[in-house]
Image (tube, rainbow, N blue to C red; front, side):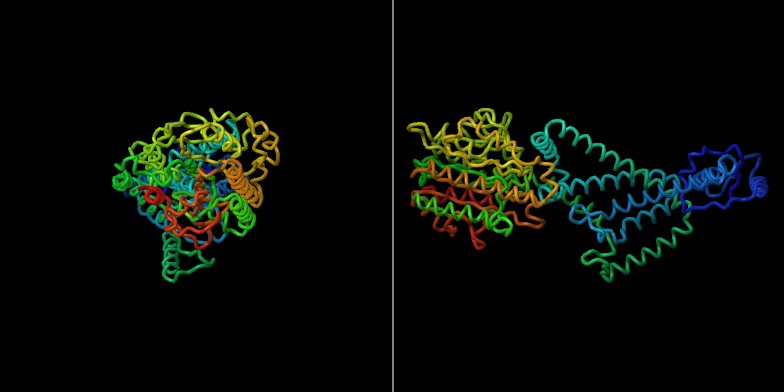
Length: 616
């Protein structure tokens, strides 16, 4: 029993802390007075047995009871009813927030009604913990648990973004630098104001998740404490149901078990991911220490390509789905088949296969680093370690063998120190390629201009030295909304001819409301990039040109769907038959388009096989 005198009254706002699921029986005035008189000593509440924890519980109950009694005196039944409804709504919302944090999947595709027909074991454990803790400990644990749930919610939201773009979850150790890249992409695509607005919205959302979740857990904790006699048997019953469902593998929705432990599993997986990330640096150092070509002299490198101009062209987002998915394969395949006929008529031959990229949906630099270094570069930590090393890259091997090496990077708009590591004699980027047209969303210039500028700057020079070029073709980069068209090579000039094309069509935000339009834009962009490469070989190719073109990674899941492979096509084109004879043992298929049975290598295997095939 607990008695309260008038000087223990609390303000009316405390009524909002009451739940509509909690009702205090209002005593008649005379009964309350009698009760107060019986249970107080000198106008003060009589101490409750049980020490500090009991005193804390008593304090909570006194505050709740006083708030109800104040309504009788001041606000009347209408005010009390309004407050009770508001409090009930707040409590219900708090419960929904906590339930969502525990049950919600970390992939957008999993956000279905069936995903929420589950019982989270973490919620049962949390209620049980709150019931056994003393009041003082509850006051500390509740907000900490709320912050933890808020962080879990943030991780799930970030995971949704990573799965949607990169087809993998966020890595809490290795992926922080990608947020800077995301801001850069937003700036290029939507402008500085749009990027700043997106960052501010993200920060506010994260803060709201932490604050609201902490307040929600605090509110539910008070409810559980007030109704412990009801909560204990309720939790017991639900726990028995959970155990039974887990033992039987019960599912109300196919593939979604009723007994859920997804939040605990996610936390456990992240802990393993953190440990793996911390250990990865040493594992990578061990891999990088093995290099059979580290000390190979230049005169023994690439002897089978002496006198050739070797162009390695990365086609952005050119993945296996582009040549096999029925939605794209017929049109993209038609481009490649037509290219086969045109190049064969001009005396060229080609061989194709697949490589497995270390990334998907983005992170092109990881694919470039993997292909050129012969190491598996699947995260930013490995990429940074690679750039700080003396690893012999494919570019570096050509340079050691006395080729002029250049990098053509139209999307690079500022200083790019990576160029020195890769062993380029010259880097061409947006600042010195001379483009005077308008950009195409993310792409700073059309692929045709990029290839034309390279040709003018390098291969068109009389008596030029053999050149090895790495060229990034970015017209097929997301968002696939502004797609250029091929023009006559003689009309390319300074690129201003492309300006009207950059203004055609709907803006990105309109196109992306319809996934079918996004996929159609992706297909058209791949068709454009491939047509451009084929046309370049027709126009500027000769007996000394060797073209290696490949995709850097598969496009985002909005194009491929979930669970797509990470394979990308790769093709080698040459007029000199001796070049392709060198790779006859690879088993690659004839033509520009690899078939379903074409060989598949890991991308990091290419450097060593290429240097072996064309070395002494």
